[in-house]
Image (cartoon, rainbow, N blue to C red; front, side, top):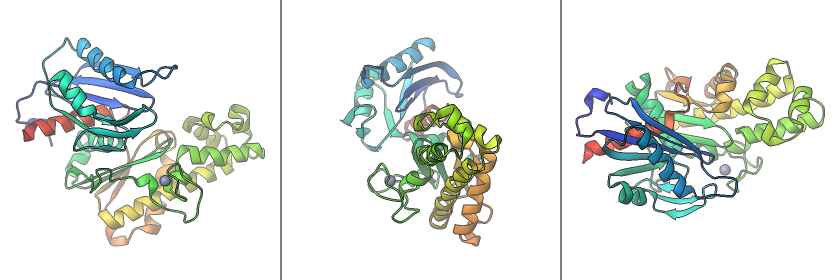
Length: 328
Ligand SMILES: [Zn+2]
């Protein structure tokens, strides 16, 4: 969808990214120029009230934009959530349970509101704001603290029966493998997320097999972040490199399975790990895809890093509300 194809009458829209740790709102004009931006932590140190913060971040962005008339609000939020009703089912990080976010915002701002999973929205933003817009079928995989996935089929986000389709991170890749946060064993997230990598690297550090990591982070998982892992690999810590390569290969295995089932034109990889170690990640993901996708299905599939950074969710959310406004 190109900007010039938008025919519905709309003025400005607001895109909102509600992350577990930070929130961001951007007001866009009809040409997707930014009129106002606001960022906040999702909760303060005392716990705080996430609902109030969503209003603050939107109001601040509107104020910076000079309080224009807005036609709608698009939101990307952690799930699980129901994209049809805009109800957030359960987000422990934000303290929301069956929270009717879309209704609350629609009543307050008196405009239509769309709410979708943040990774779906991020994949959508990447799709419609880059040359990927020429593709009809795109899979997004975002390894970070967990592993999120978004699937676009025929130019639409795939929601499935439950509304929560696209949980790539919970695809089983190692039967009877390590436990995952979801309670199952051997999910992709349990062997290839930053936390999974950090656990193995911390064990290497404890055995003095990763001296740079031991010196910089000790064995503290929260300290073993993407940039530190990249630096350790640059400094020649081969065992650390082996752990990261294995994780990236598992992501390639999952991507290969998705290619077999969905036959996308492109697989986009985003998030901090990929940004910090792009070449290594792409090498291993390509190897995993080659080993696990059927040759006819993987032929001509682009496997590439995400091009948009921090703005991808707000931009995708803004596009989704504009698309919705066009159907009204
Ligand atoms: Zn899982």
